Length: 422
Image (tube, rainbow, N blue to C red):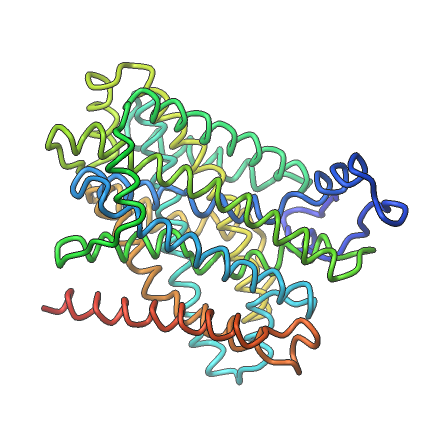
C-alpha cells in the first residue's frame, strides 16, 4: 500500500483483501489473518506509550500491586470501546471524527475539535517526552541534542512512503517492548500472591485516586477511538463486513491483552523493586538509575531501550490519529510530518522548563481521562443507532454495558475534578 507522502490519510482508504477461495482451511486462514493484522496492533501501541509508563511507575512505586485491578478493568473497557470503534468504521466507511463532524454544525464542530485536539496534544506530548528521555538515558547526551535526534527519528518514521512499512516497524518495536518487560519481570522476581490480589480485589483511597484515574486515561485513550475506526477501513475491501468485524474483534482482543501484559509488567516491576525498597519514583531517569543497583545493568539498559521503542511507535500512531481528527472535523489534510513538528512544541517547552517528566506524564494522562467522555459518548450513541449502523447496531445488552462503562468514566472524572479543586 503505497502512499503519496506526506498525506498518510490516503492509506486508510479501503483496499482489496487477498482472496481466500471460499471457506479457508487452517493454513489459508492463518495466512489471511496475518495479511489482515495491523490496525489493532497499531492501536495497541497507544496503550503502552510513555504516558502509561509514568502512571504505571507511579502506581507501582507508591501503592504496590493494589492498583493492578484498575489496569484489568480499564483493559476490559478498552477492548469493548475499540470493538465499537472498529465496527463503526466497518459499517459506515467513516472514521469516528468524520462521523461526528458530519452531524455537527460549524460552531459545535469547532468546539468539539478543540476538545479532541487537546487530547491529541496531551498524547503527543507524552510520547515525545518518552523519546527524548530514552535517548538521554541510552546515549548520555544533553537535552538539546536529544530533542534534535528524537525529532529526526520520529519525523523520519512518519516520512515513510509505505503504510505497510510503518506497520512492520511498529511490529518490531512491539516485540522489543514485550521482550524487555518479560525480562524485567523475571529479574524482579515478584511474589505471585499479592499480584493476584491486586488484580482482582478493588482498593482505592483519596491518595491513589488521581493515579487510578490517570491509569484509566492512559489505558482507554481518546485518540485510539478515532484511530481504530480509520485504520480498519484499509481492511474492508473485497471481504464481507461480518468477516472483517470477526477478524478485527479477535485481533483487538489479542493486541490489547498484549498491551495489558506490558502495562501490568511495568507496574509489577515498579512494585517489586521500587515499592519493596520504599522508593517513590519521581522521574524516568531515577527509575533507570535505580534499576541498575537493584536488578543490574541489563535491566537498566532494557528499560531505556523499551522506552525509546514505545515513544517512537506511539508517536507515529498518535500523528495518524491527529490527522484523522483534523480531516474529519475541519476538513484539513495536513501533512503528517508538518503536523508532528508542530505538536512537538509543548513537549519541548515542558522539557526546557525542567518540569518533572513523570509528573508531566501522569497529568497528561489525567487530561486524557477528562477528555475521554467527549469521545466515548458519541461512539456509543452512533454505534447504537440502526439508521447509522444498519444491522451492525449495538444490541440492547451491549448498549447497556457500554452506556454503564461510559457513565462510570464520567463519574470518575467528576470525582477527580472535585479532588483537584479541593
